[in-house]
Image (cartoon, rainbow, N blue to C red):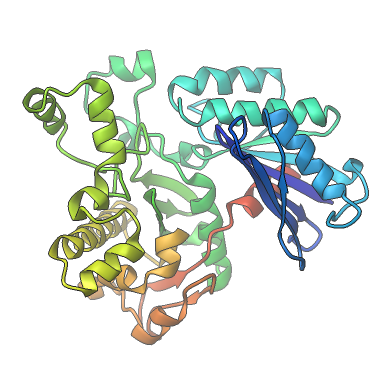
Length: 399
């Protein structure tokens, strides 16, 4: 049973073909610069070298056709024909309030995804394009939508309602939605397995730390709070996003700097975060290097980020009434021992103790326990695998 996982962007289409018998990746790749000059399909079959297919990729339909051609190619393909693909699982960013889980795609589902474009104007249109392209090329193959927001639909009302006039929620759906749900769900389930305990008995905080970062409180297997909000701008300071700030700052800056709505949006989404603080980079590797050379603003950016993580860990432990397990995942969470250590410093009173040697050991895709043997709270570094989670949910729905 083979599942094709698709993550469509505005000018890209990432894919993985997964054999669900053993959950192994048969092939993966990315069609880049769709509709732009110098487009290319990078295709990597399991155990073989990457193949780059340079050709004009005028739209997502052609990209999907090229992906299928690569998968069945006699030299670097991994299946004999398209009929071997059991189903296609699509990453869709925003499901709004309608979807609390993954769904089989039909016309009604497509209408809801389109309706939610106003909630995710940068992502849902691209996701829709990817789905429509696959339906065009593979009309008889079942398709499933897996939403970034769905895992967080279990949050109680007190966690998702903003303290602004209720009409804003009733009229426009302004509330906390949360994102990275597929990743948070995957690593929470994986942590429970590593602890050999039912997830229904655990209180877990999952830290998805990358260029976009979010933290989630997972109580008894369900998301009960998360740091991102109505949009992915809220919560932790990120690579270029400001995270949670005093809303009055926006009006103050617009007046002082004579900024338009577009300019303030770019300022908060593209020029802030650790890039804005440091003036160096949004890449934490660059910040680490600059801090090591004595750059004070780079040090401050790293400390602000780690301090924010610490605050969320404490807040979510209080919200859940305890903590059994803490998980770090995604690019920074999996690969930056300094941030993990700094975020956990001072939390010994909560039962969190980091083993410095283990913390340094588990990077670059290595999964493992980074807390001491006597730490009451188990702390893990777990590489996320959103593609596998999408494939699992696809199979679960279609069985």
